[in-house]
Image (tube, rainbow, N blue to C red; front, side, top):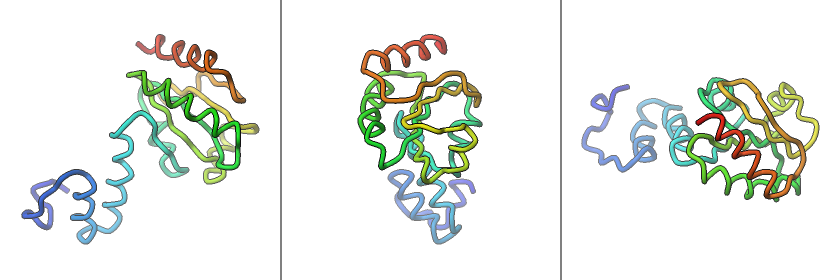
Length: 151
């Protein structure tokens, strides 16, 4: 649907969320797709679902780091802010966070048997990773290694 074909041309659009509210009555489901896509445009840390994993990781050009995690995992909770801090300092890699309890098929496909598990993908292919909560310097060096290679 083109913007000049929106159902209410007098509506003031202030961003994707307001566009979603305008489109919601016209095309059910489109507002949800726009809203979930907005996360990818906002920043470096993206929360994935089983449904969005293919687009965010497997079909993606370039490098992406995936944090396979679970809400109940204590080491995962302590690792996430460290990953986030280092990723936000980089321009050429994003962090996708996936809760394996909500994405059992993806977890099975990538043989996630321990948490936390972090994997680097390039052009949809797994190229590196680590398992377990690592120290600050390990994570910094791991991310630096992969961002330097993709420059």
